[in-house]
Image 1 (cartoon, rainbow, N blue to C red):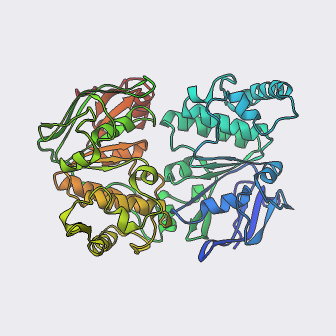
Image 2: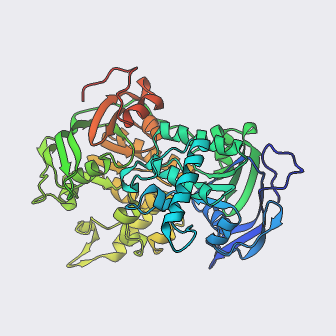
Image 3: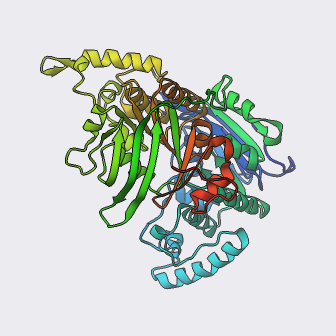
Length: 524
């Protein structure tokens, strides 16, 4: 079916029209006869669960994949897009979730890279500098053209990606999960930029799993489920609840349903924790905090401010100075007696921030991944050999209890969607009945249905009297899951708040290094 969108007159040619797009990868059909129209000068959202086909569809539009069948029309003209250069020539730009920037190049060099006017770089740089000044003025995209990418924040880096697309004369911008690494203030600024682009006649496609963003900034939203387009509606005529149900095919609880915490004895006590990396940069600067049994302490902060190092120290991956005790007993922080295995023996389970690089071996099967780190469990042994049958049987139970799909323990980890990969890691760690669960970015890149499930499992563990240290860049997640919230910036804790006595604005200021003005700090 064909979907109408936007606030433009129906007589205007669509900026983008896809007709009957289908794409398969072996037996898996990622897109099934998708037709959609996006009108010029609108912001069009696309949402759907992991594996719904959103990224595949946009990759076809941007020339990364070739559709098995179907047609693409740009401004009413049938267009063939065999590669990204053809997409750029057609006026399409894409801002990826993980930026495509050369970190030791300047902003100016990154903008020009691949769009040079000739063999000599000087004239191209001079032209780009002039155009960047004009683009920055017109679209609030101010950024120092001579700054090195590695020396500017992620919000500025994202502006560089947008400038790259605009410099290449893009009239259509595709943004893939653009706020995942931004503070609330940076996200608000991005939305102002998008409104400015829209006012200048640009067309924007916004891929996001955040329903609040869809409701705030889009004119129209399309919902995908299992490779098909299930609905396209004007944003003003729908609601987050309706969109969630369209995405998942059932009613979804959008808030965390939990009873008040009943904190017990202190499980984790951290005092004056400091970490210096191999380049001599201090990543943690005298951090002190505690987590009690039966509570969730949320750590809010923009990525790169020390949260990763905190989890690594507590998980036995990183050395540090200071002191850490678990259930009153000190942990070794020097690396001599400190490793992930010794942490597990002390009742610490760790769900790492990057499930694919640190939580799983992607080419190994699900049943093999559920045993990693717990090979010496007597239940997994058969004499001097591993009891693979016992491991597979145990994994099948975990798959059932954690609703992992497909329910096949013989599939490689890479064959599961991101949400189901996360469930495999969570099942492995939570079912070890830990005293302390370290969990980093529990729902990063996870769809709404899986988010609901993961939150429920974390709360259940809390209600069993376990201590949970939660690290997340998602403020909504921090506010809804946490019983207490600590904010980290530049390796230091900025203060602590109770969820019912703060909001995203105050936490966002603290995440940017400014103390919240409207709430009293609670001593850590």
